Image (cartoon, rainbow, N blue to C red; front, side, top):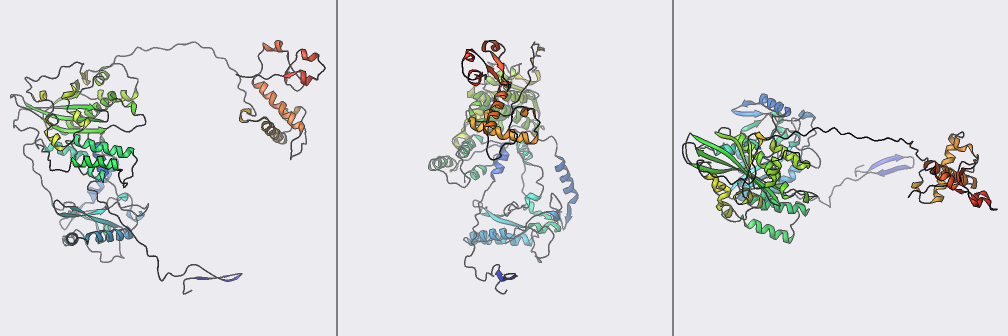
Length: 631
């Protein structure tokens, strides 16, 4: 029908059904888009937390190796630019990748509304798109209806650096509509290169001269194959963001980052949502922490580890570990000295701070255990730094210092610790080669700052022990005096456990087997005797109907009972059945047979007869049923 209704002919006559055409919409839809700008995603912050202390894969996975071979074979040079295909996980034509046109249109309106408030920003954004078009980085889609599958639109938004007055366009490959797939979900992520980046930064401070450069629009110089370009169409996003914005992969300012980590942990314990406003007391605490950063304090770190130039140098790696009631820290230092000179310099290379995890049984993480965890962090950090400084003339001995006597006692113990938590971490440290663990006073431990935190950048900058280690570490090798060792040092190469004598257990025992008799009806499931008897009646009826020749019914049983109610005969039979069952399960002791005068009547029920048998009462009143009461 012209109105949109459908005319259906039925047996009752024509019926109008369906919905009319909506020519006028009186309830317009309103779409609100909120864009949150995060300079560094929180996931990057937590990824950096494990660098240097987690086990790295020995070799690339088969998937990464196959992906690298595939990408290498597909790279070509077209018009002086590299051209690659997108690394789809499966055939692009078989992907259920939505177009995302509606989502990108809404995001575009939101970006445009925010940019038009500042014409300068809007012009810069427009000029960037025009510039990329002129350089051949992007191109106009001339025939939108003709495309190669899959067709997908990318949302984009500006990232503004107010300090440099720069605007950068960022495309969101993770944008999705509802539970559908995003473009990033369909692509191989590839191996992580973050650990290699940290290794580059460590080696960057070794040579006397370093050169840095930046290739303009380096990532934009790679062109996408024409078959996959339609998957990258586009139309013309607090507290954690602040913490993640401080990029410190080497952990050089970890003492001042620690209070921020602890504050995040308190928010987690309060179970606050990501966008929930902070409570007043928590907001005040955050303002106090934020004010420590809201100044012009600058921490200047020398790029080079040592200032003197000599070809005859020796290097040592020293790591200090410590733990407090709420955090653990490991700080690695490089000690450089001349073999023929008295020059000695010490520099902080790498540090790692971990806060105490939130567990249901926090009392199990005692200070000695936390000190042991800190020692594990230190040992793994030593291996990590030693791996990336292999171009230096390093002393093969890896030095680990701790102020915990409990850790040294555990390490030197030749007997296995019953605590699995402690034993596993001891095995992790003992398995390393060329490791020496020694004791030092807590006042000489620079890791104490990382485990307790520092209030401001100015205080951190002026704390010499954090940057240079204890004073005795900087003295020349010819006159160095290490701390007096009150406890025996641990050497992993010399450690061996005492073989325990093999003890063959021997014991003598007697085995008494008794038949297991399970009750047909478990009376413990019933709280009232009438309900138990009534259930037994219907149970016996069922058994009688399926097998009338069963031995249970060899005695007097009502063969044709009424179906709608129970009879007295059935109740008596059920009661006698239950009594016989309990007497078979728990028979009376043999010693009570004569004392109680026990006998079995014609219904095979054990009864007791005594002097009341001489009275004029019937047998049912003078001969009592014997039931064993278990206490």
